[in-house]
Image (tube, rainbow, N blue to C red):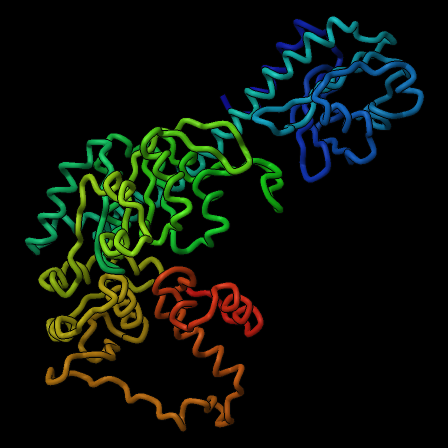
Length: 498
């Protein structure tokens, strides 16, 4: 049942308790109440009707006190409370009732009942409809949450299907000719059907999220949500809310309840990417979730049960992190039940033809260049590269080569690789700029200090792939606090790269 159908049926059922000529459900929309559903012979006249809540103290009071009330003739005389004043030609003193709808600590709107004849609803009827309104509010809240979860589920399934359509995804794992990769794929197949936590290890850019998606797609939870969160990309002050959710008013800016990633992943799989960057103060709360399967949203004293298959990924040496006091040992052993380590690209160069074909097929949707392939000479050049950025770097190199090549074959001249090993006979790295060249702009003028600073910040952000916080982040590399770096970025107009 969708939300609109639920409201229609709900309004039909309330007629068994309190007869009406018009029943309407108003939902909140940024300080206004808007008719979401209406029943009765007057319904066609009020669909889409909107009122400013500031003009109706009686309605605001009903929402704040969460108590239903019937309007008296005195209320009508003073023009306060009737949400259809000026819209419907109802006689003064007509029967009218307003019932607040709320659930999970938040106001959803109001249910209104109107009759054309002059008679107030008895208090006993008001009390009954108030109880019914509580049930309707809970049903409406559940329906809206289901819509959010279903939309997220469809988005994630669509993304998974897109990734599955091209071999650059986890399909390459099983078609790999590298013994190391095939061993990882075999172990992943073994653990995928279980709910055992998996820790995915590997250098940056080795495809850890793609392996996580493979585990999800190969599991019994494949038709449920796959949700990922990068623990290094979100400021520590916001990470708790992102993980566990928050209630309205929990902190400045929390204008409504919000589900956390654990709740969004309920029934499915949650990937905690870069788990090694998780602040130590949140690790105890995460441990409780892993152990007990419950989360406590920020600002709430109630626990919410969640059923999530947990995956974690990192490029950090977690044993060193434990020794350095940056990671709880008990959390590590909870997450590392079944570790999988992805080899770097330099250790699986025999997969280059497969990877190139898969990535070029995937990129064709963005570049519009179909049928692209790498020549044998081009592959030889790629094999000679050190690949510090692994699969992510390979993808970028192929996409740049596709853009600058006019034909369908990517030869060695198409690839811009600046750190080729010496003695390979391939293109040498571009000459580095001298100190005298560095401050010059394209127009030949001397760059200002702000321009040089902005350029250096941008270079470091590119190196860290947009990561500001944590070990190895841009703030640490530049030797400044993260807040100071963000302030300078804003002042200099430096964008945060991905």
